[in-house]
Amino acid sequence: MNTQNRAETEAAFHAETQINLAEGKVLIVDDNEQNLELIQAYMESLPCKMILAHDGIEAMAKIESERPDLVLLDVMMPKMSGFEVCQRVKANPSIRETIIIMVTALHELGDMERAVESGCDDFVSKPVNKVELLTRVRGLMSLRLLKKKLASFLADNERA
Image 1 (cartoon, one colour):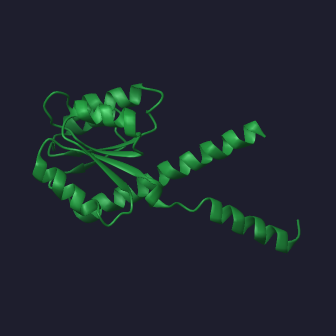
Image 2 (spheres, helix red, strand yellow):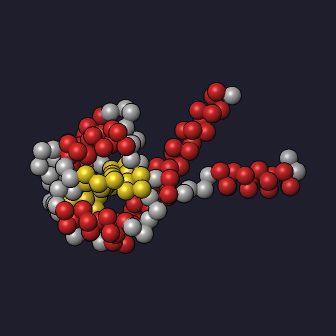
Image 3 (tube, one colour):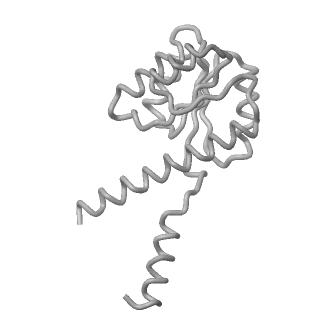
């Protein structure tokens, strides 16, 4: 491959693998309206589509219907805890690739271990630090969108 063709191929690859966060969807789940509004306000600087849920049951319904790429999930909620939502998502093959960031006021080591055991990908402590939240969401959302592009690319190559 000559230098010009290689440069064109690399440029095409680079353009193809650029991550556009506007393609991503984030579900924010919290039973406390003030917490929900605060996280939503923090997230406004990102171009992702945002979906809201107020409890675990509503979160599961929206995860199954909306297929968000990333969920910011409160741990302590009525009806269904964040731990249970996370376990159900990670146990379901059709949605298990959803990135879950637990948002928790729990600071005990056992609670963090339980979050990891339930399958969460990361966690953020309350009170939420905006810079920390946005950094984690950007990084994990980019990873999720890149994985989706790779899966699509592989599927296209298998059909060809």
